[in-house]
Length: 121
Image (cartoon, rainbow, N blue to C red; front, side, top):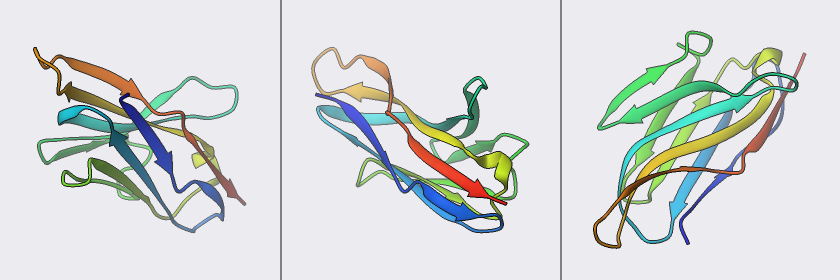
């Protein structure tokens, strides 16, 4: 069973830092793009950052504060979040395009269940 599992969320004061992790497990041949989304209470889910073949991209709201990285040997993507603001409070979701081991090695998109980040003022 293929799954994405996030960790690293929690409560932090404004100006603080957190590091989120997302591990992909199961019958995975390789990983294409990976990314992070977030959903604040009462709001729609929004894209935060993405990484693909070494290229990274960020939403304007987090550019300069958040850094996305990945460890292909561990099938893991990270989101280092610095200078956190109360408006960063949300459930953060991992998303990935995974190439499955089973032939014909289809690419499928998966979501994690999310990890809650709360930033207090």
